[in-house]
Amino acid sequence: MIFSDYEQKTIRLSDERWKHINDRHPETRGQEELIRKTLSSPDFVQEGGKGALLAIKKFKKTPISDNKYCTVVYKPSDAEGFMITSYFTR
Image 1 (cartoon, one colour):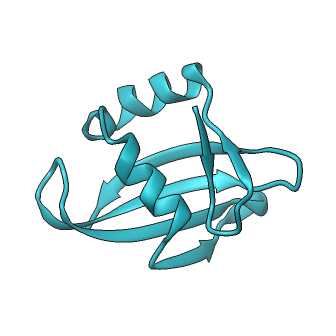
Image 2 (tube, rainbow, N blue to C red):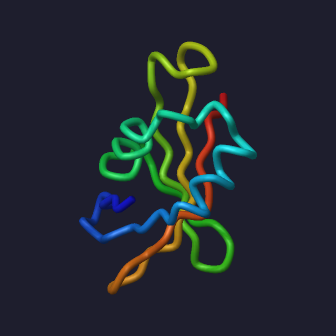
């Protein structure tokens, strides 16, 4: 899958990484649109370790309950970045 972040940078999500994310965070299954919205228009972005960014967006409805945040951890690049993980949290 291919996404774009809030700076219009391409973020790749490989099938293998998507399976890993779904295995570790089953609530993300079928939530590609929330992940896309989080990357493209986050409420805020936080710097993580080793050059990673955390895009965070609050949603009124999520697969786990109301008023939760979707977090997408990814490593941007001018060429093509990649997603590390995604999950829902309080």
